[in-house]
Image (cartoon, rainbow, N blue to C red; front, side, top):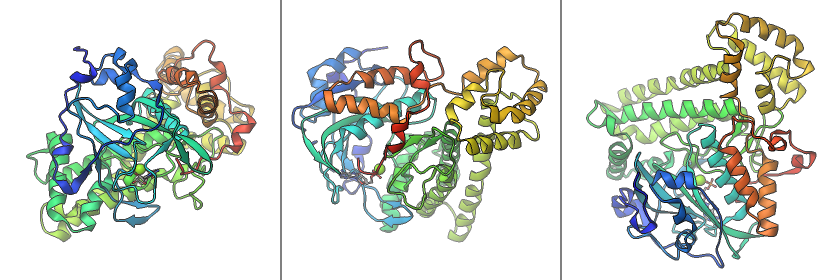
Length: 482
Ligand code: AMP
Ligand code: MG
């Protein structure tokens, strides 16, 4: 692979070629006294960037917006979205800036700064991101990638001396994140609700050409695109539920067209299994509770379907009927992916009647006993019941396993490849945050990042990272303010 310097990145910038009404061009606003806090060579490799480049002062200056690689064309994109069920006609990159789109070996990657200052879409916000939330996004996006779950990636992170005012004074930080596209459902909603049909079509054509090129020339290509987004979202929701991930703010502006996990805010991984878990303290009614996510994914897709309606072929009522039929595939697609994934977690290579029920009974016992989600599934690979309350269930489970052709060692290996030892529990992120905030010591970010790149492998000396949270973690409140 060709290893490039920062100056040699090959910018394509397809989004920047869209007309003016899609974005505003502006420069990032630097923070005082930037300091590099984390870099990710694995993400750099995706754009052919040599790892030494991340140590250059220019890289820090790039995250701080003081220096931009040649070819970058920074812009903030406009979008809209349904926030907690209410339509908001104009949102957009309020604190993010797309630097451009870079050609890598395996595809193109958008490079986006988050926390780089006010944009025309900041509304009442300050355009900043605090160190705490930036560390959480950095670590979690890479942890999700380690788990094999589609997500935006993180290339680097800077801390600063810039005061940012939230519940208290915190320090500003900037994350450099990457994704093949940061397109959200809300991008389409923006033009649909303004009845800007030409722009809606331009956006649709763009998405099709750049991100779903195999659909160009198909009959009714936007219906095909919609079907693919439905399938991708169903798959993503299944992956979240299987790993115990609660996103926290599933507004349509936080839903990726490519089925990526995007915009990490008040997210959390379940510790004790509690299906009604609400990660976001501002979500008083639990709209985005853990067990609501699949349903909300479907609701969000119906909002996207509405926004795509003018692009579907044929007469309106008939196109609407086909869009609804497409949406009806969502729930079964989710159930299929979830059932398959759950069987894999249980080490069942074959699907048999009653498997779903077996899993449901395990989950309700785990809920009643408040058993740790990640640890319980990991322990199932062993021969003993993970907990005495599971003894009766475990006997049944052993009987079910007897029906499988696979030997026990193969089963154990297969289970250990899907049930992680390590997830980014809130208290783990919190320790990294406190060290960074208090001592400007970023070593725990690095340690966690390294650990979570291989979440399925038991790593010597890292046993404490697989433990249940300490009592103080119960008090950790994750709010929307970030
Ligand atoms: P979120 O739900 O956190 O992804 O953000 C919702 C909207 O608010 C997006 O348009 C963000 O760009 C915007 N936003 C969030 N925080 C800020 C901030 N501190 N300054 C400006 N805009 C913000
Ligand atoms: Mg957002």
